[in-house]
Image 1 (cartoon, rainbow, N blue to C red):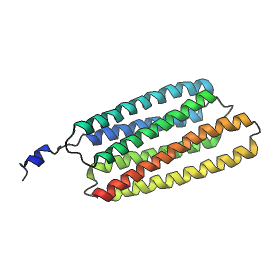
Image 2 (image 1 turned 90 degrees about the vertical axis):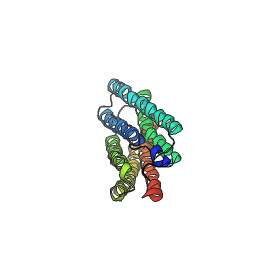
Image 3 (image 1 turned 30 degrees about the vertical axis):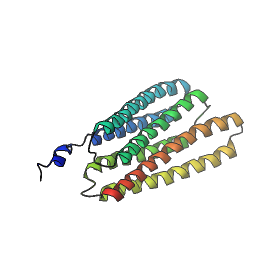
Image 4 (image 1 turned 135 degrees about the vertical axis):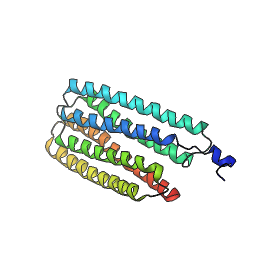
Length: 215
């Protein structure tokens, strides 16, 4: 049966996995940059980091478009087209949120970012690392889903920790910051970073859907 018409159409080396891996790598670079940006949040430095993060955001857009083009030209895909497209979009959304956070940091130019901004950025990176590991396992998900399930759980745990960091940040902000304008600026920047952790967890949920269908 290996010479059947269907088997000849089946890609021997699915092209989608390497592209998804590239998207995860782009996220990882962006997450490292936003940590460094928060650690060195003076305006001039923030501008330079935003430029670097913007480059990653553009790279992610190119890869997302590549996934879409491949879906339109590939007869047989390793998973449902909708799942692949949804996963690629969410991977790109994480990088987009990081870029949006850096952009707001530059535009709003707060007097000082709280230490919790670095803590939140590090939680995000922990989630991005989990996503990279999970993406690495996608091509063997039909053989074993044990590791990928663990990574999805880690993503969920990361999002819970990130929520805690954000909530404590809000409590401290409203108790101690007397400048209303600064409250708005810092809250908006931190909210964008927190949304990035939410989207990272959504990636895990999409992967869990794929597990249910194929593992």
